[in-house]
Each structure stands twice: as C-alpha cells, then as structure tokens.
Image (cartoon, rainbow, N blue to C red; front, side, top):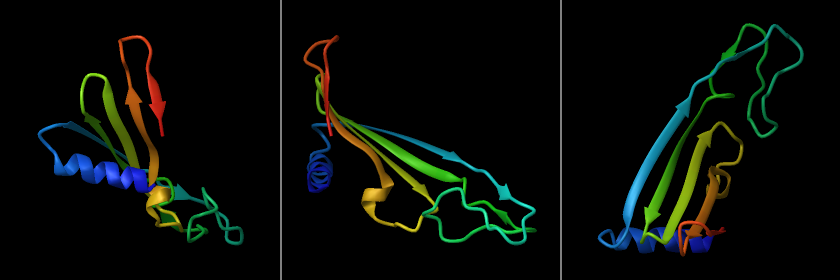
Length: 113
C-alpha cells in the first residue's frame, strides 16, 4: 500500500513526464422487499438491513474512478477506486486494483501489483 501511495505522489509531482488518463463510472440501483422480519442486505459489510416498505438506493449503487498513468510506451500504472456503501471506509477497501504494467514489445507484457 505504501508503494502505491509513493507512486501516486511521484507521478503527481512530475506531470510533464507521465500522461494521465481518467475514466469514471457509476451505477444506480434500488433494493426493496416485502419482509417485515428478515432484513435484506446485499453484502454482509453493509450497515443497515432493508425491511418492508423501504427502498434503499445505497446497497446496489456505486461509483468509481480508473486512472492510467503512461510513463512511456513500455511502462504504465493502472489503479481503480470504487465507492459504495460499506462498513469499512479504509483506502484498502476502496482500491479494487492497482498494478504496474511493463510491455517491452507489443506481444509479451508483465503486471506487478
């Protein structure tokens, strides 16, 4: 995790060296149930359960950001952050992927992360 933060700081402090590409996404969904006794959760890590006559937009909805830093034609860093309702609000929970890609030629490539 410290390596990822250090890489973010390094890239941010040298914007002329790396090109940055940002992509975002979001999905919106609603949950509802007719149960008065058994609460519904789509994930165990969510705070509240859903009961009859309630609509919950947080259980299924999410938003995210994917960043790709291209240092050269051979080296790229890719990271994806996803925000959704969860009991864990740590950065480790929000980072869904982070890796360094090395492609010495068009065919072979390696990913580290």
